[in-house]
Length: 432
Ligand SMILES: Cc1ncc(COP(=O)(O)O)c(C=O)c1O
Image 1: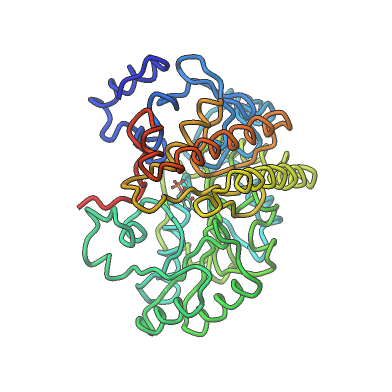
Image 2: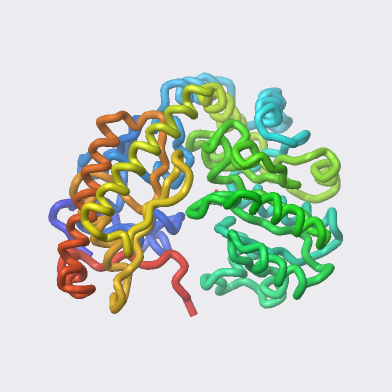
């Protein structure tokens, strides 16, 4: 993997190879997920909806650091909150009162929540939810749909489960999102054993009418708690997240990403009858209650008013329409879908029959990077995406899909022939 267009990216990638196993600390940032040579390997800075790579090229960001940057990079209000707090210290031996202020704001916004605990990562929040559900129910099994983080209980259900004990794998299962019968079958096979049903309430698939309430009722019939993983949807689909948007109440709700506009903070919220069991269940860390992130959360929540959500929805809807028009114009609807809620749509590219890798996805990413847009499938709309940025993004999608259509005229090999570097890899490829 060498490249003349992005020399500093290439140099740093080589340097990382002997320093950092798998190059990066986050799978989605890995060079195997980005078309090396066209997309950069390292970014140096960001402002608003833009980022600059280490070679000085500017891009419109769509993954927005994998979701947290809901206001924009280096947002002035958040920056000011962080720098002001920085003068007074980062973290302390005892809690800081800002914890309570942010707790009150979160509880005002999250339907049904009476208590909240803060963590640092989404994985903290979902894993605390699972431990708490086990403690509440006295059961050990967990059923999951979606992605929930790097801890054993969830990774046990994936193809990247190397290193996860067999005993843990036996306790974790999956069900198909959107299909109550799939969940029912799993609950029956594990009758009386399931502590928690954990799901992303809305993602690539938006819930059909009645699905989420049906799932909650079904889980309760079988004595399991329902954990909504709102690490992505929380504070993005609206102040009260997916619970508010779809008018349902989960037993426990995990938050992360948008809460801190990029600062590491997550939260677990729910009614007192469950959350107060955390008086005894161990969920604790050195950086719990770290104050810079809480200051960022307070500032972020302050900016996320009704007008902000209107903008996230209208900008997302505009982009969705433009991408759908390009899909139609280039006749690639058999491979390319546009789905999800407007503040975070997904443009997913599947592979033509006969492709031996993610050739089509790679080509779209390559061509979009060439047009100055970072694409990985997620359109995380932020408040800083201007109409002009979205116009650039829509044009880049059009160029990517046009290239795909052109390649496809010669079948999968035609797509491969247009790739200028090794195709990107599936995130959850089998590793054994
Ligand atoms: C829905 C969902 N849940 C949980 C997580 C895990 O969050 P983190 O990576 O902050 O641990 C993620 C991360 O992408 C996520 O998208």
